[in-house]
Image 1: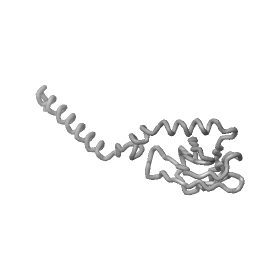
Image 2: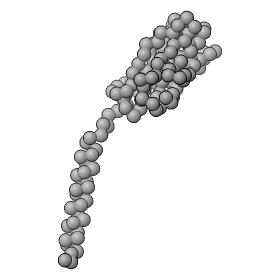
Image 3: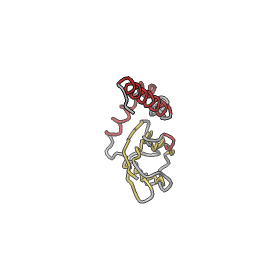
Length: 144
Protein backbone atom coordinates (compact mmCIF):
# COMPACT_ATOMS: atom_id res chain seq x y z
CA UNK A 1 0.00 0.00 0.00
CA UNK A 2 1.34 3.36 -1.01
CA UNK A 3 0.61 6.49 1.03
CA UNK A 4 -0.09 9.73 -0.74
CA UNK A 5 1.00 13.13 0.57
CA UNK A 6 -2.42 13.97 2.11
CA UNK A 7 -2.47 10.79 4.23
CA UNK A 8 1.14 11.40 5.35
CA UNK A 9 0.28 14.94 6.48
CA UNK A 10 -2.76 13.64 8.39
CA UNK A 11 -0.65 10.99 10.15
CA UNK A 12 2.07 13.51 11.08
CA UNK A 13 -0.53 15.99 12.35
CA UNK A 14 -2.24 13.22 14.37
CA UNK A 15 1.07 12.17 15.96
CA UNK A 16 1.86 15.82 16.78
CA UNK A 17 -1.56 16.30 18.42
CA UNK A 18 -1.19 13.11 20.49
CA UNK A 19 2.30 14.20 21.60
CA UNK A 20 1.02 17.63 22.67
CA UNK A 21 -1.85 16.08 24.63
CA UNK A 22 0.69 13.80 26.35
CA UNK A 23 2.86 16.80 27.31
CA UNK A 24 -0.15 18.64 28.73
CA UNK A 25 -1.18 15.64 30.82
CA UNK A 26 2.39 15.18 32.11
CA UNK A 27 2.74 18.89 32.99
CA UNK A 28 -0.48 18.75 35.03
CA UNK A 29 1.04 16.01 37.23
CA UNK A 30 4.13 18.09 38.18
CA UNK A 31 4.03 20.33 41.26
CA UNK A 32 4.80 23.88 40.09
CA UNK A 33 4.46 25.53 43.50
CA UNK A 34 6.79 28.26 44.67
CA UNK A 35 9.71 27.37 46.89
CA UNK A 36 7.91 28.73 49.95
CA UNK A 37 4.24 29.51 50.45
CA UNK A 38 4.84 33.16 51.37
CA UNK A 39 7.58 33.87 48.83
CA UNK A 40 6.52 37.44 48.02
CA UNK A 41 6.12 38.49 51.67
CA UNK A 42 9.63 37.20 52.41
CA UNK A 43 10.97 39.09 49.43
CA UNK A 44 9.51 42.36 50.75
CA UNK A 45 11.11 41.77 54.17
CA UNK A 46 14.60 41.27 52.73
CA UNK A 47 16.08 44.38 54.41
CA UNK A 48 15.66 42.79 57.84
CA UNK A 49 17.36 39.65 56.47
CA UNK A 50 20.24 41.79 55.21
CA UNK A 51 20.57 43.42 58.65
CA UNK A 52 20.77 39.96 60.27
CA UNK A 53 23.53 38.95 57.85
CA UNK A 54 25.44 42.15 58.64
CA UNK A 55 25.14 41.48 62.38
CA UNK A 56 26.47 37.95 61.85
CA UNK A 57 29.48 39.17 59.88
CA UNK A 58 30.34 41.69 62.61
CA UNK A 59 30.79 38.92 65.20
CA UNK A 60 34.36 38.07 66.16
CA UNK A 61 33.52 34.36 65.88
CA UNK A 62 30.55 33.57 63.68
CA UNK A 63 28.32 30.54 64.09
CA UNK A 64 30.11 27.37 62.92
CA UNK A 65 28.14 24.59 61.22
CA UNK A 66 29.99 21.27 60.97
CA UNK A 67 28.90 17.91 59.57
CA UNK A 68 29.84 15.05 61.85
CA UNK A 69 29.09 11.34 61.59
CA UNK A 70 25.31 11.03 61.94
CA UNK A 71 24.71 14.62 63.10
CA UNK A 72 25.23 18.29 62.36
CA UNK A 73 27.05 20.37 64.98
CA UNK A 74 26.26 24.04 65.61
CA UNK A 75 28.86 26.02 67.58
CA UNK A 76 27.51 29.37 68.69
CA UNK A 77 29.98 32.18 69.46
CA UNK A 78 31.33 32.27 73.02
CA UNK A 79 30.55 35.99 73.43
CA UNK A 80 26.84 35.33 72.79
CA UNK A 81 24.82 34.23 75.80
CA UNK A 82 21.44 32.47 75.68
CA UNK A 83 20.85 32.20 71.96
CA UNK A 84 17.32 31.44 70.83
CA UNK A 85 15.71 30.99 67.46
CA UNK A 86 15.18 28.41 64.77
CA UNK A 87 17.29 26.05 62.62
CA UNK A 88 15.66 25.14 59.31
CA UNK A 89 16.84 22.15 57.28
CA UNK A 90 15.71 23.01 53.75
CA UNK A 91 15.55 20.50 50.91
CA UNK A 92 15.12 22.31 47.57
CA UNK A 93 13.86 19.31 45.61
CA UNK A 94 11.11 18.30 48.08
CA UNK A 95 9.56 20.81 50.47
CA UNK A 96 7.83 17.94 52.28
CA UNK A 97 11.20 16.93 53.75
CA UNK A 98 11.92 20.36 55.27
CA UNK A 99 11.96 20.51 59.05
CA UNK A 100 12.99 22.93 61.76
CA UNK A 101 14.54 22.63 65.20
CA UNK A 102 14.44 25.13 68.05
CA UNK A 103 17.83 26.47 69.08
CA UNK A 104 18.86 25.13 72.49
CA UNK A 105 22.66 25.20 72.88
CA UNK A 106 24.35 23.59 75.87
CA UNK A 107 26.66 25.43 78.31
CA UNK A 108 29.51 25.30 75.75
CA UNK A 109 27.38 26.94 73.05
CA UNK A 110 27.05 23.69 71.10
CA UNK A 111 23.96 22.04 69.69
CA UNK A 112 23.83 18.69 67.89
CA UNK A 113 21.06 17.74 65.46
CA UNK A 114 20.90 14.04 64.50
CA UNK A 115 20.74 13.32 60.76
CA UNK A 116 20.39 9.53 60.71
CA UNK A 117 16.74 9.70 59.56
CA UNK A 118 17.36 12.33 56.84
CA UNK A 119 17.50 11.55 53.14
CA UNK A 120 21.08 11.70 51.85
CA UNK A 121 21.81 14.60 49.55
CA UNK A 122 22.11 18.39 49.52
CA UNK A 123 20.50 20.25 52.43
CA UNK A 124 20.58 23.99 53.02
CA UNK A 125 20.78 24.77 56.73
CA UNK A 126 19.31 28.17 57.64
CA UNK A 127 19.91 29.41 61.18
CA UNK A 128 17.85 32.43 62.27
CA UNK A 129 18.76 33.34 65.85
CA UNK A 130 18.61 36.13 68.40
CA UNK A 131 20.91 36.94 71.29
CA UNK A 132 21.86 40.05 73.22
CA UNK A 133 19.07 42.12 71.69
CA UNK A 134 20.26 41.50 68.11
CA UNK A 135 19.14 39.15 65.37
CA UNK A 136 21.54 37.01 63.36
CA UNK A 137 21.31 34.76 60.32
CA UNK A 138 23.56 32.18 58.68
CA UNK A 139 22.95 29.71 55.92
CA UNK A 140 25.20 26.92 54.73
CA UNK A 141 24.92 23.93 52.43
CA UNK A 142 25.47 20.53 54.07
CA UNK A 143 25.86 17.34 52.03
CA UNK A 144 24.64 14.29 53.94
